[in-house]
Amino acid sequence: VDYRGLVIWLEDQKIRHYKIEERGGLRDGEGQTWPKEFHQYLSDVGCPVLSGSPEEILDWLIGFAVRLEFGDGAENYRKYTAAFIKDCRTEQPKLVSSNPLDNLDFTSPQFKAGVEQLADFLKIAKHTDHLVTLQAICKLVYTRLNPKAIQNPKSVIPEGSPCDFRQHDPGFDLGDKQLNEAGKILRLLYINDLRELQTKIN
Image (tube, rainbow, N blue to C red; front, side):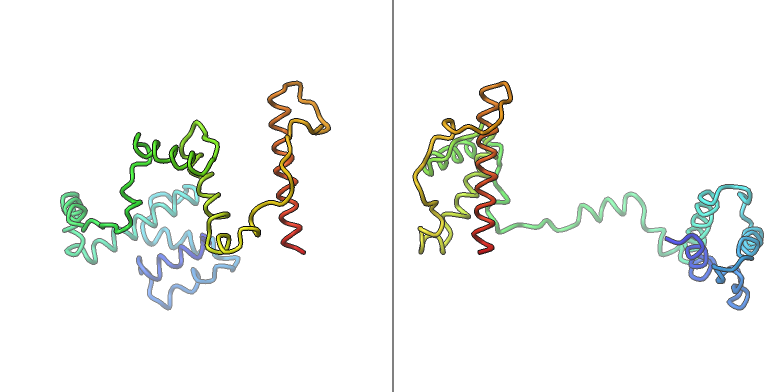
């Protein structure tokens, strides 16, 4: 927020110390005399931090505006005590969701067992984190078991013969067998993503 613009807004809308016709110097935010006009304005409103930083002066002006606002409508604000706000919060209606998924406990043993059974049924390798396994299940259902895929299975089933990725030379050696195999898998997945992108472009 523009500093000078905020000062002008506070005077126009909340403080209103000057008459409208007296605010011309403040409203000329681009004028070279604005710092002098602003200093005079601070003196007129009784700002105690004339030599303070811009942030300190602005903080005082905002607090001054709040005090004036409260003074103008004190009776309207007096009821907003801590007890009143607490009562309002306790009286808020509780939303009852009709979605059964909102009531599931994703950390319960029953839920974990259900994810594992579903993974076994769909022949998906299980991760040590059941939520990761659930993500894999969701991806399979989204890509392979949607209505279009069920009507035309060939559109989502990869063509070609399966191959053992361990037999392929990745062209690099990380000095560790498991790291090398992980690198091979990541490389094949990257190539597959590029192939799918090229298919979509074609």
